[in-house]
Image 1 (cartoon, rainbow, N blue to C red):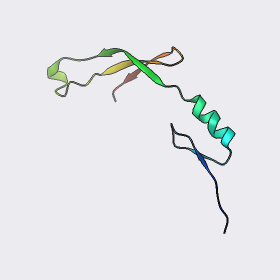
Image 2: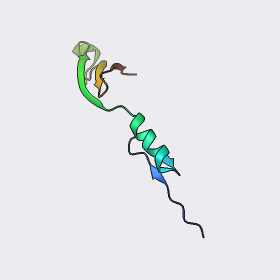
Image 3: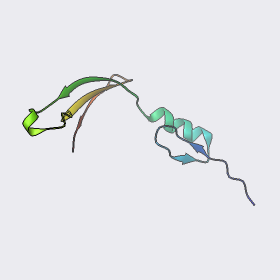
Image 4: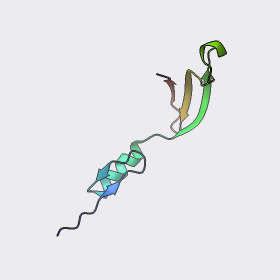
Length: 69
């Protein structure tokens, strides 16, 4: 029987056989730090009240807009 040792990225869950490659994967993921802006539509168009889009600022300063599908 062979023993298999894997390293798993804590952000995306991908398994790697090499620790160095797994560490590179973990470092490549940006961390959301703050919601900068939220956009809504009137209550009659969205009964649940969820935002239709949000602007998220990441730890590197980038701001990205996410829209509801």
